[in-house]
Image 1 (spheres, rainbow, N blue to C red):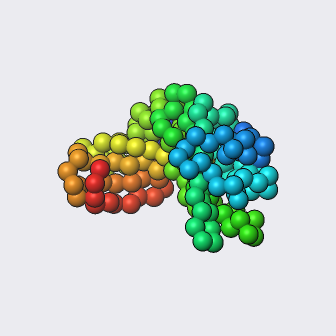
Image 2: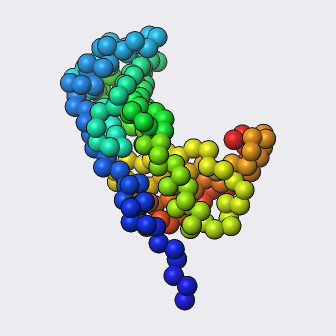
Length: 193
């Protein structure tokens, strides 16, 4: 029986986040009130209870506060949306959290995450792990982006591989578990890179 390749302990350990929640409700409320985004944050969601609920859903890759933070929001007839974004120094990109809020009921629900605030130096490490496990499956595909997953999925990354920029080109999205160095899910995609 052939044993699967094992990631180097240094590489995989560096890819496992020390994810944490550095923001409390007071910090989120202060960021909402200081928002410089067009339209800012609607007054009806600038409450201590809503800010606290938002803070409980926000993780950073390193557990440290972001270098830059941006908050914005909008309200419709019955529901509001708040977007909280932040980027760390040396990060591959921006972490974006979107929350759906019912101001009348005071409920806050996570709507989506798009998390790219991991160290940019991890890209080649993650690429190497994925290629070691996926083998020829990736062929000439290039890693174009990655996003990290917060707890309880810490240490997992969605990696986007694409061919080269043609509309409708083939791509492959891989869910990589950095602790094991194994690809645990594959999704073939057609579309823009």
